[in-house]
Image (cartoon, rainbow, N blue to C red):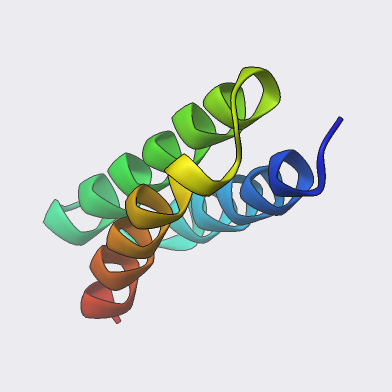
Length: 68
């Protein structure tokens, strides 16, 4: 496994755990979507070159930060 795989997986787990603690509503739904994006990036990083996923990762991080 690559380092990017573990990095994206850690972000996915953290995002989904954060979503579980949030009250039901739009913000929780968006946090779950962010977790799913990280999860998809994890799957892609396991099979492909890691540099191509950094733009998607930065976009997901920007979305997650806008939720706070």
